[in-house]
Length: 181
Image: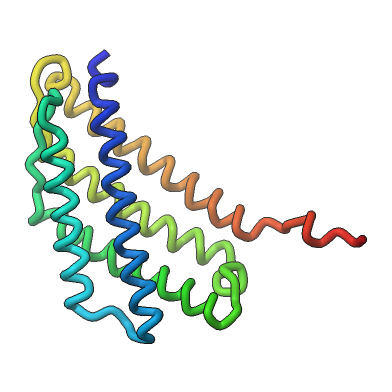
């Protein structure tokens, strides 16, 4: 019952992260179009935008049975590393596409899986650090520590599975395109 009360929060959190990732991918597209590597100011701009998204997320949490104080001192280094790695991967993919090479040709399945696993592991670590800033009341407060631990375990297991499945899906032979007529 207490966990059902957190469902809107978890859905909003996923939407928040999608917005941040979309901003990073858009930045990578701009960098690729300009033919340049990311600079410190690009990373700083993305981190500033991420904080704006966080503020909007926090404002939307009003009325929910939890409050969140984001521990930026712990999260920013993880977020910076995740943004750097994400930009690097996105630029690599975009540059390859411009050269007429698809993702399969750019990265073997194992390398793609490692890169995805690294990004997801950083996200899991960031989420675990964020859990320290959660304040709750009632039944949720009693479950907070255990819920954070379970969430971390589930996220890490799903990150492993998702990275593996995504890499394999990219490299799966597309039989329909190889049929003879």
